[in-house]
Image (cartoon, rainbow, N blue to C red):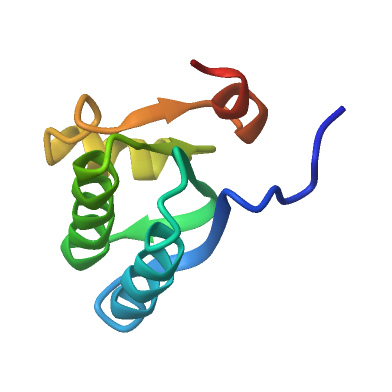
Length: 106
């Protein structure tokens, strides 16, 4: 059974750029303060991410790793995947095709 939006999942939409990246970072920080063992960021509806958006995700990943948790990206569209690859970050993040795969991962 698939849950529509489990509490450990942050769903992002649209373009993650300078205008919204601080909000994304703040939302992630608020969730990370609760120290979830796994934080999933669903990028299925993200059409673009710039360096400020990547920085917000990197900061979140490092903060989660600091307490022994794991940040996971799901639903990465091909154009966003290309941006992650070009920035040499595709290996940095744990990337899964969809939320259910991330929830099932150990």
